[in-house]
Image (tube, rainbow, N blue to C red; front, top):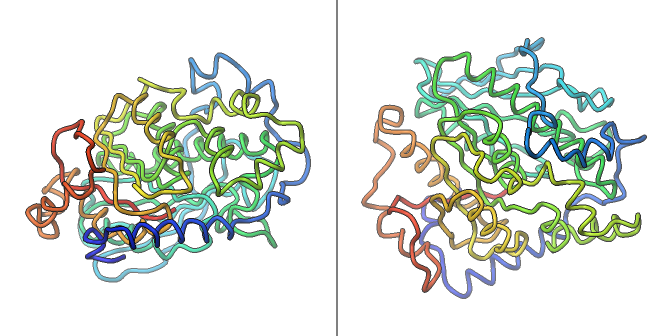
Length: 375
């Protein structure tokens, strides 16, 4: 994470961002990887019209969580890290995947005043960025609970890449993975609430989509989405990142309209006006080739045009801005947590104008810039 990344911009930088996104699009798992057997989620359940009016029909509240694994992993520089695990309330029938893994990053020597569930992006192979991001929050008094998404990290079946089964040519399996991710997220939030501190969610890319769905299901003190968008079927259909998956689904006879109907419950724009987050922040990348801008704007419009910043980065190069993201989240939580020591508002105020697209009028009150990370 680069402390001076906010100063990067210009034509050469834009071309570099776009080149990195094109390279990233060639490094994803094959759509031939599909979980074995029939999907545990039926087409009827996906098309249930009541699910959009009552989201808890599709994403049921989990029973009280009782972690059966609790292991201390590390303690250094005022941050204690603990691994927890419990069984998913909506198992998919694959043993490794149905164990939910959470890493809690806590202040080691004093009580946390805020707690955030952190949801990573799809196909993350390592935790190098997420680890630094969560340590940065915990060192300033904020507990960060990093959840492994279905089929990712510890939850990936042996012999498959992290996230290899999450998205496939079978849209019903993908819908089942999204449903499990959201219900697991509800369970993780219930664990965070036991600490008595205000609770929020931060999601990156796919995790940002899941975060918006959680905001429609759970009362939260803060909701943050990073390089996320609405209309998930449209994103998969049009993004350069997922063209192989589109072809795989077309080979099964799938059309975009049919896919949109099957994935309606996983589309965050389906829950317009339902957000229960008392504060909502969006920030996205101006040079993003992997997430077409119109889908971000659709999500922003349907959620009442909350604060948003268009940042001088692509979907992949946005990871350079992670350090500033931590500082801005701490600023939104408040100085009682961050102590104000790590945030220098004057330094970032000058960058605020640079982060607005040329000719675009600001649509919200002035804030310090919100700067994303890669997925």
